[in-house]
Image (cartoon, rainbow, N blue to C red; front, side):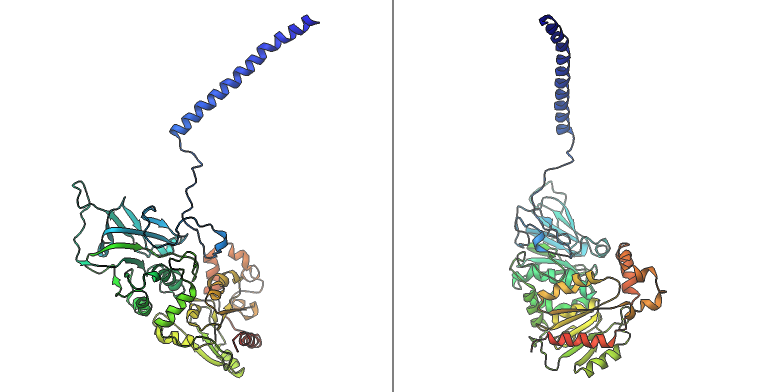
Length: 455
C-alpha cells in the first residue's frame, strides 16, 4: 500500500511543479507589463487634483459642494495658476507685476507671467452661443531684462495707481435678466470690497448699455469706465483681475464673497445708485405694476385685468420697459409698487428695485415651465426680501389652444417636448404663446398677494 501511495505522489509531483512554474511565469509577466505601462503609458485614472473650484449651476445649492482653498477670495494668490475656473460658468485671471494693457489689440502684457493665456471675461463660459459674442484677450509674458525675450511690450502712455478689472458687456448682455445674472451681480461680488479704488475696463461696449448702468458703476468705482476696445492708450497697472465670479442666478453666496457681501448689500447699492427712497411695501392702497410685453407672452386682456384690479381697489400702473427705458425713472416706478406682476420674461428682473416685503407675481405660461420660473425668479426673490407668488396659466388661458388642434402633442405632452431640449421649449411655449387670464382667478390671486403685504 505504501508503495502505491509513493507511486501516486510521484505522479502528482510533476503536475504540481508545472502549475507552480505557470503561476511564477504569469506573475513575472504581470510585473514586466506593469513596469512598461508605468514607464511608457499614461494611466486612465490620473491622480485626482486638489479641489480648487466649485462647480455651480443655475440650480445652485451650496450644501452640494465642498470648498477647499480660498475660492471666491479676490486677493492675488501666487500658488494658483494665472487663470482658473471659479465656477462652472466663470473664469478668472489675476496677476501682479508690470502690467501693460493694450485693449485696442486685445493684448495684456504681464511681467512676471509663466506662459501665454487666453480668456474671455464673461460669466457664461458654459454657453458657446453667448461666448461667441465675447472678445478674447491674450495675456503675454515679457521680461525687459532678458535678451532672449520674443515679446516686446508697448510703452506705457497712462499709469494707474489702482487695480484694473476687465469685464465684458457682450454675450447676452442687453437682455435685462442676463445683465444682472451674467454681468452686474458677479461684478458687484468681485469688486465691492475695493471700496471704489478700482479701474473698470469694459470690452464689447454698447454705449446705451454703459449709459444705462453708469449710476451703478459709479457706486463701485471712483473712476470713469474705460472703453477697453477703442481706447488708443496703453494703460499700465501693478495689478489686474480679468473676469467676475458667478455664484448663482442673480444671487450671491456670502461665504464665497471676498467681503462677505450679500444680495441685501447689492440691493442697498442699487438704492443709492438710483435714489430709491421707499424701503418697505404696504398693504394700504397697494400699487400694482403690470409689466407689459409687445411680442410673445403678452397679456391679451391687459385692459380688462387693469380694470378688474382697479375695482378691487388696487392702484394700477402698466409699463413696458425696453433697452431705451430711462433706468433711474423706471427704477423709481418699480420702487413705488407693492406688487409687480408679469408673464415670465426679462422684465421681471426689475424686482431688484422693489421695496422690502413687496410681492413678485410671476405668470407662468402653459407648458410645464415651473422649473424655469423657479430658477430664474423664485429662488432669487427670497434673497431679495421679496414675497414670491405664481399664477400658473391653464390651457384654457393660453393662446396655444387656438394655435394647435385639440389633443395636439404640444398640448397633451409638454414634458415630452422638454426632452427635445431648450430650443424646442423656447419655440413652442415661450416664443409662440400669449395669455388671457381668467379674471376671477386673477382677482383672487391679487387678494392673496394683498394679504402677504405688511400691514
